[in-house]
Amino acid sequence: MNVLVTGGAGYIGSHAVQRLLADGNTVVVMDNLFRGHRAAVPAEATFVQGDLHDYDLIVKTLKDHAIECVINFAAWTYVGESVEQPLGYYHNNTAGVLTLLRAMAEAGVNKIVHSSTAATYGEPDEMPITEDTPQAPINPYGMSKYMVEQILRDTANANPEFAFACPRYFNVAGCDPEGRIGEDHSPETHLIPVLLEAATGKREKAYIFGTDYPTPDGTCIRDYVHVVDLIDAHVLLMNALKPGQQLFYNLGIGNGMSVREIVDAVKKVTGVDFTVEIGDRRAGDPPSLYADPKKIKEELGWEAKITDTETMVADAYKWFKANPEGYGDG
Ligand code: UDP
Image (cartoon, rainbow, N blue to C red; front, top):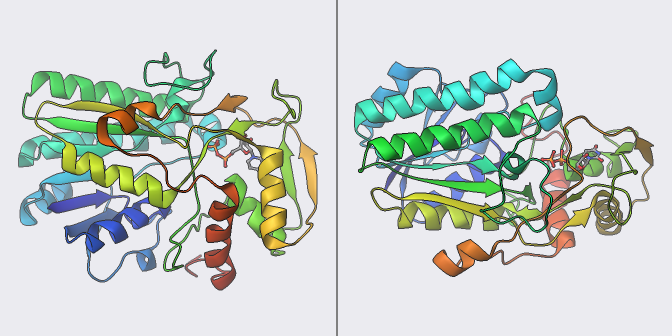
């Protein structure tokens, strides 16, 4: 298939590009390189520098490359930052996708797999989270993605040829087990890479954001899914999508790990007893989020193959050790 991967130079997008190429697809990557890395895009993919606000460029790219499906990873993804910069989040994550969808309509492209998030559920009363759990985002990041889900529903309701899948990610971790690409964010805020920075001396210490949550050890619980498994689900979704379909699936392993448990896993894998201090709660963080991933297993046969946290940490650490400066582009 001819696939446009928007945000394909980022952490998750670059893993998708690698897999799509390995499967024999023709891949075009569009990325504004705000947080993505040109070096994360293999030479076999066509690279177009641009962002989701550039309607004309997207229409041209879709037409020039006879794109059949778009997979959109382009987004700002930090919960804490979204509380401080809501307009940036709505501009990029909501308005940007609106422009992308308008461009797709103009070019006659009717298939999209769009990254959504467990943050659209807010602070649910019950765990695990199913696709029927009511969505009530509690931060601008979750709301920016929730709004896109609604835009996609309305678009599909108006056009029977249009089809979309919204995988709702829980916490994505790990990287290519062969160490060709990895996770390089600047600034880095995600728990596992932050802890790896502390373990390798790149930062002096790490903080646990809050130990007074209503969870067994007082720290937040999240469902960590390996990026390779996550991408596997995207490929299944892309290949399964039929005109008119509106698909929503939780992508998690179905098991929650606390921040303290992740700290222990990183210390064990790295063998370094780095300094961890207790900090304040971070704005916008729900206490506990983990998936019921049954629906996608029953309907498409997907389930996470890697469920062991230490394996996820070890894969992330491998790339991290080999590339202490990340992609080296700042
Ligand atoms: N967290 C933490 N210290 C850090 C970074 C994150 O305690 O330096 C916590 C954060 O409060 C959340 C969990 O780790 O409960 C996962 O955060 P992350 O930013 O990795 O992903 P998110 O859940 O926000 O998507």
